[in-house]
Structures are given as structure tokens and as C-alpha cells.
Amino acid sequence: MSLGNKLQIDYGLRLSILQNVGEEKAILLDPAYNPIDTISYEAGVYNTYWNLEPRISMRYELTESSSIKASYNRTAQYIQLASNGNSATPFDIWFSSSVQIKPQLADQYSIGYFKNLRDNTIELSAEIYYKNFLNAIDFKDHANLLFNDHLEGELRIGEARSYGLELMAKKSKGRLTGWVSYTYSKAEKKIETINDENWYNAKYDKPHDFSLVASYELSKRIAIASTFVYSSGSAVTFPTGRYDFIGVSVPIYSERNGARLPDYHRLDFSITLQGKKNNKRRMQTEWVLGIYNAYNRKNAFAINFKQDPENRSVNIAEKQSIFSIVPSLTYNAKF
Amino acid sequence: MLNFKTTNMKNIFFILLILLSFSSCFTEQIELDLNEENPKVIIVAWITDLDEPQFVKVSRSTNYLGSVPTPPISDAFVELSNDNNSYILTEQENGSYYLPEDWTAELDMLYTLTVTIEGISHTAQHIMRSCPPMEEVTYQNYTDFQDSLIGYETVFSFQETIGEGDSYYAIDYLKGTMAGDSLLNGGYADDEFIDGDYFDDVTISEEDRLFQIGDTAVIELYSIGRETINYLYDIENEIFRGGPFDPPPANVRTNFDNGALGYFIMSGGQQVEIIIE
Image (cartoon, rainbow over all chains, first blue to last red; front, side, top):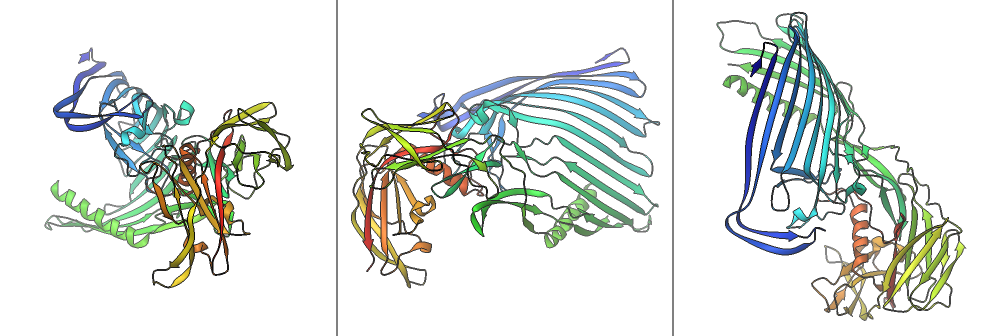
């Protein structure tokens, strides 16, 4: 819908429905999440959720080359992911909405400023957003994840929120193309019984995220490109203190996901050599010589704690990383 | 467009192949700044009816990494009581508070341990369950995979107490060594699904600490209660981290209040010595 020639509004409404269909044996939990009964549902629908998901977005043209965009939308998500965090091989499992787990409802608000420079050669944008989630889930402390046929009982329910600022400059025309972007964001959860019911970092919380991607055409057949990425390490739960109990060192944690893996950064290079252009040939070929992780940063994949093999009363931290510097040679053939 | 996609797939495959051939997983020891901001009060008390000194250790937590020991807390007021009696524990070593020698354990009573530090009291309660006697205590050959005899393990049986809610901790060790003071050398079980059963031929020895001819083995059995076995499971989960099905990292539970960590256990115990001949 256009209002005048400066304002454009788009809106819509969606109705989403999820039904749980039997036959199914479900365990009923009391408010303290203790199993109190087993219910057998007959064939057919035994549980229905429906949600209205409205969305509206508007764009206001300030000048010919700049505009403001704002949007609101509500979404319902009928499957949710829960993770036990930390380890190199975490246990991530999707939970479908059920009698116990209500659909996750998210309201997202965003507003942004967009400007094009130099005849649309350069696009600049700045956008802030806030997203609020209801019925978010996470595994409780001491969740029993092994040989448990009722994992739902190990979940706790609460709310989540994320917000941030995204800045981006993009050049899409000319010999030099690429973009630079920076995002500051937070993603947090507040779930009953977890972390003393205070807000804590979601596993995917990465406050700083910077990337620079550039590509330069040296000649018609040779192009060089480089990518640099930087982001905060992911949120993890590390022990800060300890005490001794009958000969073992018992860890004490500060708060859930209160620590971070070291920052992640990496630089990649590549040079592309295209085969001679010949319209008579059906096949076009190119060689790409690349270097992944050019300065051989050993980015942490996980940090594990263990006893020092030389002195069992001392705990040490070990960093696991994968992919050091990797040269690559690629031959592409398009036909 | 289809061609383009096909080439891309080839690219990805090729790149993956190169990545796999060049890369592997690296592990290195690193320094981390994980210093604890607010050390917690730690109270560790496992009091039994065995005829040996019974004490409570009071300390503060220390940094997880490094070798700094937990600093003991002196001048705490430590009291153990039940409905009939109460005892004041006296500090004999730094941070270790001992029950008077003339104290008598009263089985199947609820005990309260109160530790007062700088005006703040931390209390915990535990029932002292009586422990059934060990029967048929003996030892048997322990053979390795090639069937060669590499030592001897202890064996015992006992009648589990009727009524759900019991749990048992058992440990065996070479007399005169400290091996009995390590949770990792012990084993535990609860009476869920096997309430009132006869526990037949229980073994707890492990290959790295078997007994040899001439050794005197000490076997101990304690009745610790279901609530306490959960504490031991919590510890086990936290110190053997790294598996994909680990629970999320979390502080092991405590039965103390007012922010103290650690645990208070009262348990009836049995101790038997056996000479390997």
C-alpha cells in the first residue's frame, strides 16, 4: 500500500495451527515438573495450538537516495532447540510443541536508516532491532539426558530477548566490490530455576561481529579477494572456583553461559585466474588459489578442563581448535 | 543455472577434501583468567558411627585453575545436634572441627549441623541411617583379558534395608593408605527397583588398585540415603565432563542454606578387615 509517493506500507496476517495427533503416550507433569501421570491419547487430534501472526513494515523515502524502514512482526515457532552447551559435541535436540511445551512466540521490532551514495555505488545502512520471546526453553541444571525417554521433563520454560545494532556499507559496482559490516547484539534467556532466575547469555550470544569482504579485479582474467571476520567467542559456562570433597575437586560455576570462548578471527585470501575467454568453447574454466586462515589463528572450538596429569590436585584448561592455515587449489569448469 | 549449481557442488567437495587432508584437531593447554570473585563458604562433613575421629571441614572456595589450596576458616562455631543431644565441635587443626571423643551416634535420628561464621549461620540436616552388616566377606581372583591372575578383589554381600529411600556407599583400600579417602575409589548404589533385596557378591575393587598376597584389605559400607546419592551423582557428572550427553554445567547441589556449598552426611557405617592369603 502506498500513501503518497513517499510512504509505503506492507502488512499481512497469517494464521498458523499446530495439532498433536495420537496415538501417543504422554507423561503429565505437575508444576514442579515431577511426572504425576501417564496419559494415553487415542488416535486423532488431542491438542491444538493456533496463533495469529501479524506483520507490518513501512518504508519512508526521505530523499531520492535515503529512506527509513521500520517493521513489526509476530511469529510463532512450533519447534524449539535445546542444547546442553559447552562440550565439543553438544547434545542439541529439537522439541516439537506439545501439551507441556507451548509454541514459542516472538515479537520483533526494527527500525533502520538506509542511504545510497555515488549514484547507488555505495549502500549504507544502520538498523536496530528488539525481539522478545515467550515460552523459550532450556535444559535445567542437572538435566538427565542419557537413557531418558521423557526429555521434556528436563526442560524449563521462560522468556528470551535479543536486541542489537547492525551497521553495513556495501559497494557493489566497479573493480573493487565488497562490504564491511558490524553488529552489536545480545541474546539472553530468563528461565525458571536456571541461573537463579536471572537473565543469562543464550548459547548463541555473540556481542561483536565484524566482517570485511573485498574483491578486486586486477585484470579481466585475474581477481583477488579477501575476507576478514571477527566475532566474540560463544557464551559458555566455565568453573571459576572449586572445593575439595573426599579427594575430588568439585567445580563451582558463576553463572550459566557467563564466560566466553576466546574471540574468533580469521583472514582468508584467494586469487582467481580465469581461462582465456573464447565464445566458441563451451567450457569456461578458472583456477582459484586460496588460503584459509592466513595467519594460522587457532580459534577455540571448545575448552575442556581436566586434572593435570603431572599433579592431580591441579586443574588445567585445554583448548581444542580445528582448521589451521589451509591452502587450497580449486579448478572450476562451467559447461 | 543448473550448471552453475553443479560446479558449486564440485567446488565444495574439492575444498572439503583439501581441508580434511590438511587439518586435524589441535589441543593445547592454555591459561585462562577464571578467578573467583566471591569465594563461597564450603562445609564438608561426613560423620559416621565408626570408632574413629569425626570432624567437619570449613573453608572458602578457591580458584578453579591452579594449585592454591582452599583457605581454611578458623573461629567458626560448629554444632551438631539431634532431639536428644547437642555437641560443640572444637577446632584442632586449621579449619577442621572435631566432635568430642565421648560423643555417641544415635542411629535413625535426624541430625542438624550448624556452622556459624561471622554471624551468619549455615545449617543442614541429615538422618543417620543404620547400616546393615556385611556378610560373606571374602576375596577372589582378578584376571585380566588374557585370563592371567593379576591380583585379588574383595567381595561381600548384605541385606538391603526394607523400605525405599536407602543408598549405599562402599569402598575398599589397602590398610594404612589414604586410598579410602578418595571418592573416585568408592562405589554407590540406591535401592530403587531393588528395595529389600539381598545384595549378593558386591565388588568395588578396580584393576589399578587390586590386592596382593599378604595385603590387609579394609572394606567399608555406609548407608547414606537417597538424597545424598544424588549429590554424589552430581559430583560425578561434573568431574567427568566431556561426553555429548552431559547435563548443562551446574553447581552440585548442597544441603546447606544461606549460600554455603559442600555437603553434610550422617551415616551408619560398617568396617571389615580381611587378610589376603
